[in-house]
Image (cartoon, rainbow over the protein chains, first blue to last red):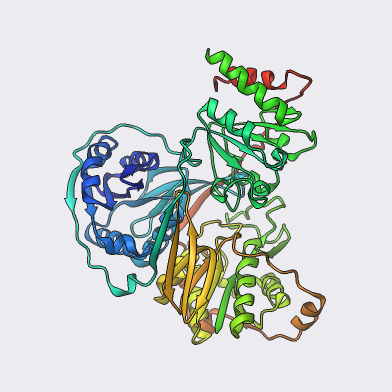
Length: 320
Length: 259
């Protein structure tokens, strides 16, 4: 079977859920080889986990040159591997870095590219992908067959299946040309850990908007009793009430959780583009005409400062 | 400083967008306009040209109507525009789009800065800026929420979901900016009048030395098999809170086994 490259999405040495999702997708297309860019000791420690979800091999590139420069050196690593085996596909996360590596790799290797795939399946001579487009109003099915199809995978969309393989670690050295070292990363500030799940990975998201008037307390308390991530509308972020990293929408994060609760959010198209494909949508808003109610499976017309705390209490009571 | 801003003419995201029978984006039934996210790089280019002196060219690739996109750029204050227009381009994928834009940029001569938005509002791929950097052999300094140019070096802040990074590179470079970077200006009346006299060049593939077989629907490296309109979400139950709204919410969640 053909090799399928999977760029491992990890932070501080911890493998993120999207990697297991990508490995599951890759297993359908061929024999996954995980590509780890980062510290070799952390790679070694993560190899069993990667193996559990399908990695036959784990290529490890522990080279500060790769992590010190933006995107281009990772492209060199993947292009080298693509050149060696002409894989059936290359899967990457749909993050800014992932998409930009994918972009350059596609041009470099003469391969078709699909971004934000929510499904991947083998197809005649290529890969069949599914995407959700135009703010979730259309589903598009495509076949990518040129070169080694480069596909970025949307988080929380593919299932995760165990498929234990060897996960043999293979250290790799790739020559990084000067041309790939043109954009230098001079500093990195990690976002404060909130103790909550990340927006893209969470199965429940509770978001607040203009209706919170700056007080996200009720939103956060409901999120915490549900083990959810907290999101924010653009209005709330622009007003400085919540960080941009929590913004759900066209220019923020796109989420597709099991449950999305929108509190004090009117539901403008910019916001809907970021959450319209959530499995279940619940809305709380004072305004019965708010567009969010058009797409909600359940809605409460009321004051979120009454409704959310009551809901939080009720959930606590049920959990006993 | 010579700045080129790449912009796109897109169907209005507020309208009901759809597809042609050949599965390309319908660019006719819905009103088109300059992509909202492209106003930010135009504004950034104008600010840079105003503070350090320079010339701003707005560049687009698209059907005849796409001229409206560069026109808006001229009205905001850009100095000149280039519109690459050729029937053979219709249905191009991102790879072909980047080929055309890269050749147009090359034809414009020594450019110090190529600016773009973070994504188009129709394709939403965020791949063209990186592809331009790859094709032009320029540093890629992308997803900027903050930007400075000093002594021939561009420095940005790039926000990811887990960390913020500061990135720098020597010009010339390809830079993309997010909607966090600035507040785009509205064209003034004076700007709208002045735009009428500004040069707009229209180029074809032949002008760029690109063979039609390299672009367009048939040349695309991924083929759309089918497009299916998602059934619109049906409005569910809406209750009015009269003291039990929170409990009703939880009862609903419980009925769906979400709690």
